[in-house]
Image (cartoon, rainbow, N blue to C red):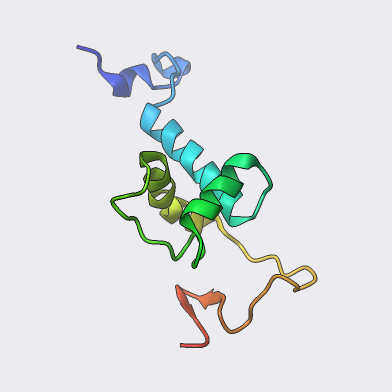
Length: 110
């Protein structure tokens, strides 16, 4: 029987230095979520936005049974994505003062 916790330890600690597949999968899906959220151009992000995000943004979208397994995983990765999101006001042209979440997870309009 393989003890993955030992195999995935750094080489200096006696492991093989492999990464756990769950961590790699979460990182990959979080990167896809980031690309959708920040409107990066690409065929995958365009298709996903057109198919799943017609009336709401990524952070507000709910998981539905009809969604593809990859899209469900992308939506499940949002908690990790939220931990790393920071505001950069810049010119302010993409900020929606009343509707963006400034404090916790609520906007000022409610």
